[in-house]
Amino acid sequence: MTTLISACRRMYMNHKDKKRVSLSRSKGGTFSIFLFMLIMGAFMALPLFYSVIQSFKPLEEIFAYPPRFFVRNPTFDNFRQVLVLSDNLWVPFTRYLFNSVFITVIGTILYVSISSAAAYPLAKVRFYGSKTFNIMIQWTLLFTSEVTAIPKYLIVAKLGFVDTYWAIILPYLSSTMGVFLVRQFIVASIPDSILEAARIDGASEYSIFFKIVLPSIKPALMTLTIFAFKDLWNTGLAGEYIYSENLKGLNAVMTQISTGGLGRTGPACAVAVLMMIPPLIVFIFTQSSVMETMTHSGLK
Image: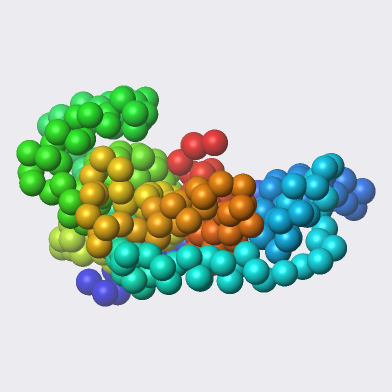
């Protein structure tokens, strides 16, 4: 069994290598493309750079016109004010941080696990109603969160999950984007012949899934991790589901800190920088998988 699985993995890697196409391009063309991508990258990074610069500006420079992309008198007072305001909250700051980290980590693990487990049979197993399920998943992608907000709240309320962590996790697990993305990646990247060879040798569907499919779809799983982490981290953990202060997350309390008028514009800029750091770190470690996943799944 182990020998066959290793052989299947080698067949999969050889199958991928055959798909690679070498491009013959002149040095001038390569330089032009590199220069174009460099300019586009700088243009896209400009808002991020400006947000970081704003967080180190004193109040008088923040409102200076025209806006400047440099700091004349850099200061850490904005971050100090965030810490001071956090110490004056009703609930300890560490509690808000724990809520956000717990919801984000657990929700991401569950979302990636469920999406990959559901995508495999929809992609490679023939059963009655599989086409109907695939069509339903594609149709659900057309509905925005605003359209399904009321039905989600009614379901969560009927289950008795209001004012609990599950009120945030369960609605997000119902998103079908992850299933669609992983299914498209499996269909495009894993040949049926590899799976059939494993079945002929006596491998169970669970062995095929854990030892062949999952190692082969790591780019899709990493991409899905980025999306799930970003969405769950940026949720306020409040609003229509959470009313207890002990269950609110870091995003909610940071929003409260930053909405204190013009005098808190500096701390608001610091809050924006602090909130973008965790998703940015996750993206840096997993970004190499994003382009490959989008190519295989057909997403833009």
